[in-house]
Image 1 (tube, rainbow, N blue to C red):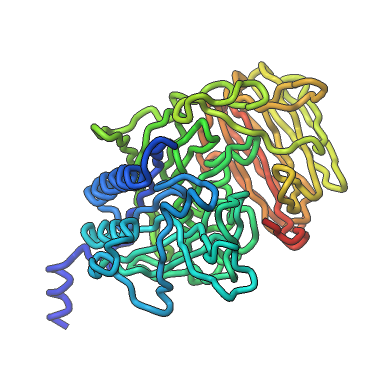
Image 2 (cartoon, rainbow, N blue to C red):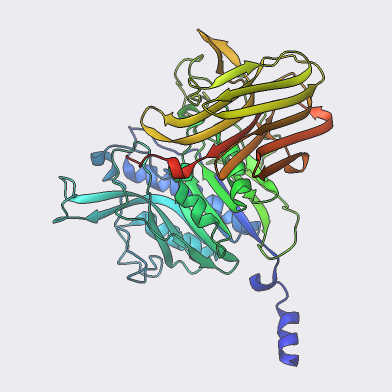
Length: 501
């Protein structure tokens, strides 16, 4: 007994004794043009990863998550072959590319990531590409290999823990679908986690796994497409974490001209612990402490660090570069992928919309059996706001489909014959009270409350209620906030059509 006490005194802050872990996500402004060589693109982007990992380590991070397509860009099959590496299956063979230098000398991505984990004693979650021979397989492409959009997880020693092939491709015609549904869970010294990639979050499997009793959260790589009013990155990350009562470590790319930005660390009960949403083309490292699942709350001690090739600095006033508009309906195509922020609206053509009239009131609307009601009080209605309702099969980019029930209050402007078509990110209307409720049939529902300039309203200022009578969200603040969106997105997963890539 005495020896045990002495050990605790000598090693008082081992990971096993702490009530939190420290997580980092890297939002990377990926380097590379069609004129650059594959080697230059890989080396430069991995150089950014090295800087981010070392800074994360200096802040005490236990894990860092990197974005989808952060090392190379999406492409067709011939282009991708310059970047893909054969990734072994860690269920069948032990692999530590940092230790096995000669065996992995021609696989620089795997070797670098492994050494980043080993040299910094951190877990690494990163997105890359796997190439596997498939000759003899009836589904084998004509070039004789499968290409997989792949997340890899390395432990503190640099050993490969997970190889996950993305199960829901979003276009990505240079990649092949995963051959089977996979178990993506892995054990760390601070909890058990799963890893998924981008479009996976729109489907049931990721939520199912997140709700397994043994799973503490999901480490998520993405290159998201910004879609107002409810599917802009940070809205989705926080609402998914709250809806599944699971931590989400979301690492997105920072390419505003490609409709992609917004990363952070989101807790299942407290919401955003730390996040960045600023369309400026600068890479940013977001770090926060996360309480372990069986412990009480801890301060996030959050930070954001800007990282460029030449310098790093503490990032302040996040969101300062958010413009009024990002809609591709209103703006020309992006000419600078790092600066010209663009977004593509959700398909709201089948919604029922009712415009708010007066500084306070009660509004109701129904769509295909779903009825939504709104009570609100403002300091004066200075912008156009609508109550929107939708129930049915949602068609995503006219290619993918799933079942949704939506009830939203949104800042909205007309375009052409549509009274509500675009969704500005700024408002001059101060809401002091909002109560939004609907007779949802969906088991799962995701709630978002967003204010002026794409800022997430603190979870402490709104209440979510899901019961047999429906689902609701109530915001109340005497001082008020300039809200732009309050929404509940129900996902009737059991009525989804089959996914087809």
